[in-house]
Length: 95
Image (cartoon, rainbow, N blue to C red; front, side, top):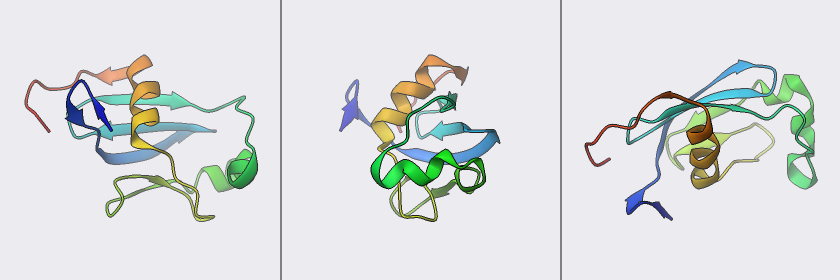
């Protein structure tokens, strides 16, 4: 899927707090995402445990955030959420 005509690529992610991530995208956008209060269901339900959530990491093969239980998040939804709390603006250079 593309956002405004470009492919959404996660290029980095770090845990910055309980149920909080800072995600970096190929176009330069960096944003903080707060998942506190989210109702985790199905395969994501174990992520309600802050200790498991804190094991989030960037997987360069699939270019998104993953957890040890096999759960991953779509880059497009991460981009949308990160855009709401930007730490830095995307560059004008195509990713």
